[in-house]
Image (tube, rainbow, N blue to C red; front, top):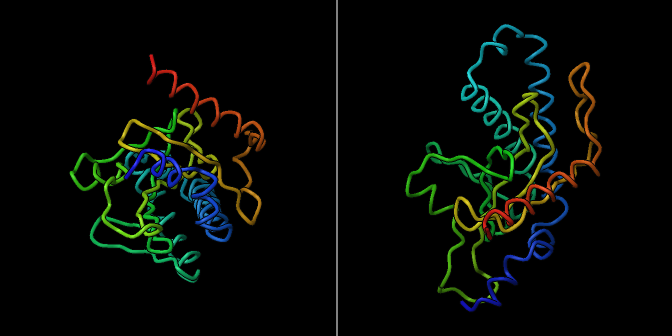
Length: 209
């Protein structure tokens, strides 16, 4: 596949349009619902939440996100939530494979370095399929604030390899974000967008240096 064709396929505006507004909103609502669950968990099971390990809390959040994904996305046409063993994927229009992961600073995501996981992070080239049937891989999740331990906005990203982020996009849901924890003000959407753009630009500068 030629370079220009790859760039066209991976264009953010094109991908977001093909996924569709209904799916984009549902993905954002999935994260919003998990954020509400986390706030409720911290209120009702304060001791459990306080003493959870970082990995244990990340797994708990992931389970809640997957639960809401199956509830909100399975009813949408051309969307399938597929689970096999520890692998969970959202498949849109038989073309986009989406996995759920926490996004850290600079849009970093972590994964166990199995061959299957590493392969998923790469956009396949040279696909012997008809035009318009190429498969693309995306990561959906949430921006995580290590300092506050809060779930930030829902984001969707495309990358080609674990370190090469092609783009990252904040998703807006059909409902307002959950109420932040007492004493903490949620950042405005403009602030969040500026932060994501800044993170992406900083990552590109580092890769070029």
